[in-house]
Length: 326
Image (cartoon, rainbow, N blue to C red; front, top):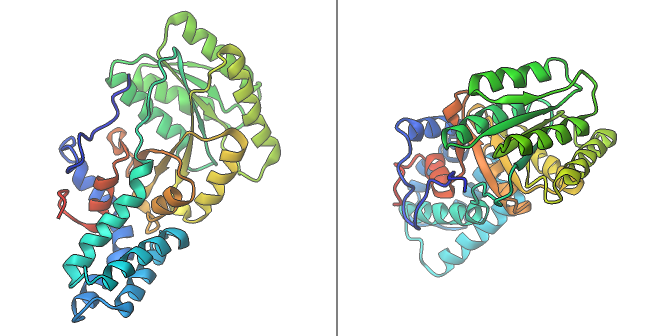
């Protein structure tokens, strides 16, 4: 079994490797500023939590790209608490907000599992610039650290230097890469990789596919073909179809997720580049709208900056808390 999960029980997050918590808080600083800038100060000046306070909070959530549906659910729940006189001051409000945000994310807090199949095939999809190949390199490193053997499949035969980039990650991690020539059939590469992994008794195959716009039908058809051909080698493959999405694109991430899910049936999502955007609230919108497990988040370029998604840890870092429930 893979051992990505960091949490144990329902309490505070299990302490992570030193430095991660500060990197996460720092990485979410722009989104935090978008969400809380002036909010606590404005709300703190009010004598009570009323409709005007909730209106300000609603605007802040929308500004941080939490999304209309998720924001409406949060505000409706907080409004009911106000009506029941459960929120008497700003501390009560922030505690309730934390609970609401964690509640939205918790159903999608599902670490990458292991079906027990060997090789376990992970098919990575996403548009150009989302950080897909870099995420593959980081994921390969994680698996190697956990004692798994890994093989990479260079199925992006369209973009110039894509194979070379993947091979560089392979060399860095001590992982072999199955590749063919430029413009080779991507599905053929994947088939060869799965067969090679089976012959070598490799644990995990990670497939790098060409970045594409979700509106490019011919390229989406290519993904469908890759998935069909993988199933010819192993009827249960691919065992994970993971979308890599750039947090900085905000609400467009929902369109990408919907289109890729329709084409190939997503089983997981990795959200990257959270450190470079004020739109990190898109994680909540994705959880509410799509309900697809969020496997990992990325907040930097370091290999250690790709981490298993943890709902409470994410919310506490976003709100600037100390990592322990209030």
